[in-house]
Image: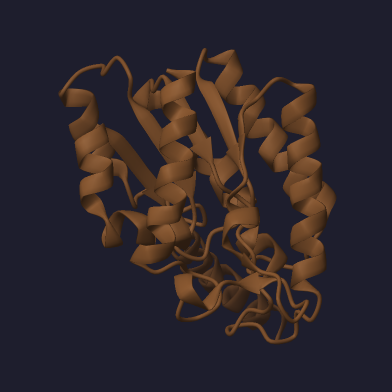
Length: 230
């Protein structure tokens, strides 16, 4: 019986190793080929990388011309949290040698996509990305988390507006203290009527992701900030 148990355990090892080798928690493969293509084209003087989640990924999908015409590079991945961003920051930002990175993080942290929300962890991930960027002589723009009253994919989160406002206040304070430009999407896109601090329905269909109209509002704000920095 002992021998049979040992054989069974031994036979499990190759399967576990094989399964682990297929894991790509940070989805580093998502932009691997696109990054290689950018590097083949050579260094671009005023390259700007947008690091984010589905809001950033959807931005490129909804208004590709905004990115193409301005030489901006979208590096958003749906569902990701700030922990994922930090993991792939070297591959998707630093190695591209941009002049500037725009960081939009926090929505999926609050939505608990990768576990219970911890503001300290999320804020720490943002600070770490800033420090990595600055060490590599990359300028930074921090942006607010967009308003959201709730998350359709995780209705158990009941206090999203309060968490988002608190995180935004902390990011804004950090940006001010460290002389980092801060772009406040939140104030321009929140629906204050009713007191639920939701994303204005004129700019969204699901309460979280902007429509093209919403992205146009964001474009006006971020391009002004980018032009000022560069």
